[in-house]
Image (cartoon, rainbow, N blue to C red; front, side):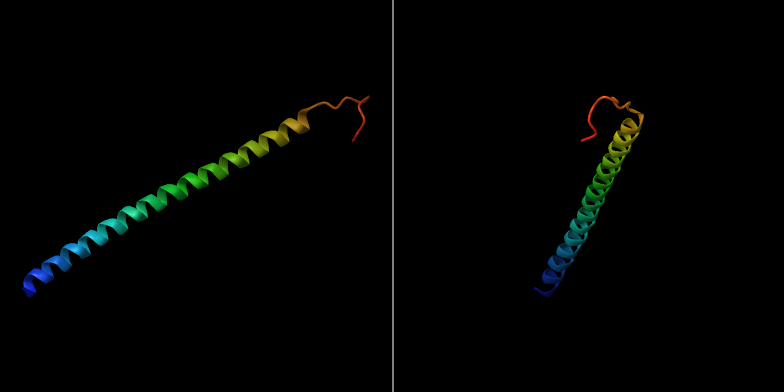
Length: 64
């Protein structure tokens, strides 16, 4: 009986370790995606700034 309980406990511990490792991998993937999205948003922002500086303003148009 004691050996069976130890075996069950060992299996449970291995399963928990496997699930924790999988969770860590998923967290890393989510973090990588979030970082990529933030970098992309920054690139879009910079592109818009460059476009704005490059645009010619109509001198006859009001400023506001």
